[in-house]
Length: 180
Image 1 (tube, rainbow, N blue to C red):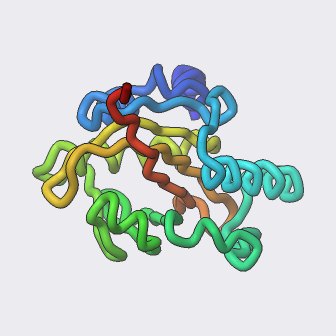
Image 2 (cartoon, one colour):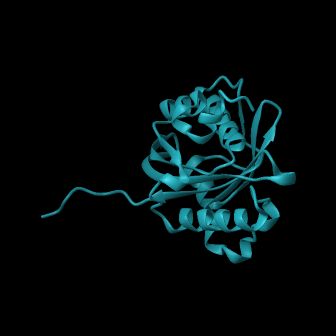
């Protein structure tokens, strides 16, 4: 890695792929250690990644994650892996599928005609290269759902799993109008 790319590997705000993702998706992205993690599921995955990272003395491998130790994450969990020209959804919990309408096998490609698919591929690429989890938050409206807010954490995996990302996405409760 050249010295000119080192700052962007540490600061998602300085990477054009993350900037494009934020612009296309309307979401905010920060390094997880700089974020106030607001949901128990996101905090739980963060805690696992940090503990596994310490034990592994580097980026943890997927086999260090035991879903039996984190059963409450299952509905919100997702796993993506590199494929030709992008990333493929390898695992998707029920809540993830409901929120984003993406099932196992879905692909985000750098050459996709859809702008969000292209920027997602770039975003995932950045996370895999950076070696550090990123927190994303924002609101989304799609064909199958009205506006909703969510928080997500995407964690890079290492060793034989390099290029895979383990994440969790959680729908946040909407704040309603004040009642008198």
